[in-house]
Image 1 (cartoon, rainbow, N blue to C red):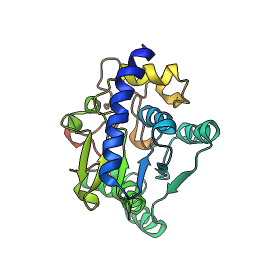
Image 2 (image 1 turned 30 degrees about the vertical axis):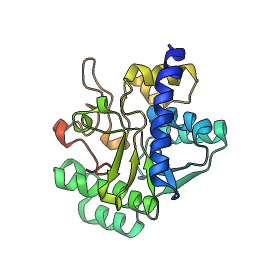
Image 3 (image 1 turned 45 degrees about the horizontal axis):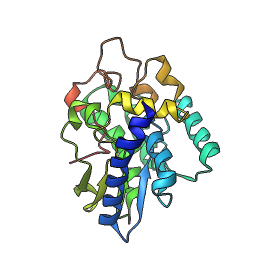
Image 4 (image 1 turned 120 degrees about the vertical axis):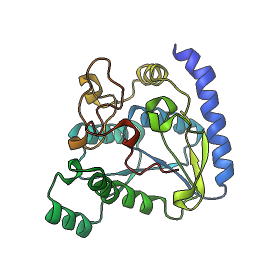
Length: 231
């Protein structure tokens, strides 16, 4: 199976990356890493396809310990430098003083507020001055991503280039590659967590549930985005 992926799918990834990088040239393009299995696949491919791309991650302050373990494993495997971005301390403290630690479960507005403070604002800083960014989004991941393009114009961040190289990969293809390459995947995946975000907002899914069912499980499927990926 890996030979099929390497000859067909990785060639498509290379073409998407090459086109996206050309669109962003001569500016700086960065890779957003949440330590998902998709991100690990892209980072592995980047080592040969575009090693100049730097990697950044957002530490929301509420990630699983297992996610940090993946970050450390990546450092050891590739000798990477990961540029971490954290929420603004004063803003986060104000939120927790006024609304407590779990306000995001009360209503959608509160959840969006929490995501904005912990994720969106740090992302804005990470992308400031950049010409483009690479993500691990795929069309098959959720109802909110079915129309995803391989290369987009990111209006929310100043019309920079947004590159989604695995856009049409299936779950099976992603995992075949990760297994064949022995990538340091999050051990929560083997415990029923196909999609992993902040610890209080992620649970294991039940047999037959959608892969994103464990993210913000108290909300409707069409609301299950945090604001990082806006049209």
